Length: 409
Image 1 (spheres, one colour):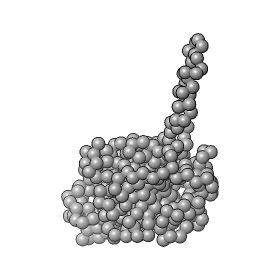
Image 2 (cartoon, one colour; image 1 turned 45 degrees about the horizontal axis):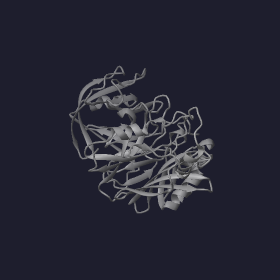
Image 3 (cartoon, helix red, strand yellow; image 1 turned 90 degrees about the vertical axis):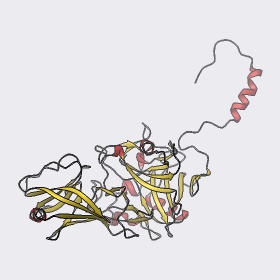
Image 4 (cartoon, rainbow, N blue to C red; image 1 turned 30 degrees about the horizontal axis):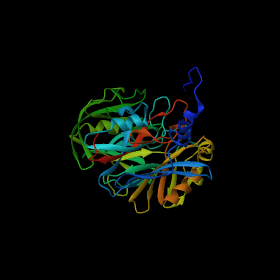
């Protein structure tokens, strides 16, 4: 988690100062991050922000409620520095997405990430493009290799929560191969197939085993299926160039022959999706990860997270600052929530406590995002919660934003 001016010399009469001293005593102190007065304010039609204090923790919450049926509002994912790797503050990412035709009203930090590289651990889909696809979550911290919870945003704005894996394949009239990863080398010991795009870099990873690389030139799209023409096949080496406007399909080990065979045909089709499918049965507009799922169909599953998703006790069962996303049973209302922690006015929450709190809001499905020093909520460009790092707001890997169309700068 993932981590005054003094009085000048001379005597000053006391009586004339009394009115000013009394006024100063009555004036409320300046409010810093995390000190906003509890209450609810409307940010836009269908979008409201609530600050709530609960002495039982004590806890301090920032709650954004979103009407998903409002066509002027949309949820979007953004990567730090608009790259597969790198870190950036949530407030900076929100600022970058301000356009003349839309305005970022709310932003929160999202998925867990590698502190050294900034790369997020789960699947990443942004604006319908697969930036990273995996069969297993890329995390060094879980107690066993598994798939962590994620949230998919479909093209209509609906939210689906689940433990998604990449479901991809490439095929021609002569044959087909599964695509087991996108912009990440397959984790299989003996064989695998991977698709690399310019998001990964300028060349594919080097490998000393048997490899076939098929360079692809895009020629169109049919529905959710990408259409490519194969331009070159190399069977004897890896680490070849990735076309700036194309992709490379790589077969490792026993999959190398299948990939090489695809080069002897004309149009190659590539389809990338999640499994399970989203509720709309359409390829997602965005996918963001977290760890773990908190609510499933109204049930608090946080207590079972150690067996379901391999959570570690110092994260799940200790009180920390938290960030979460949730949706109602109807799918029409979503919530973004931060809980401050490591402070006298808010001690943070365990995952079980967080799940129970989300149920009081009316949530039916929910996911825990990265917390601790990463927990950040930004509203209209300003950080409203109290990040705990000594240096202030932490640079993170990605963020989830709420955009209001028709509200430019």
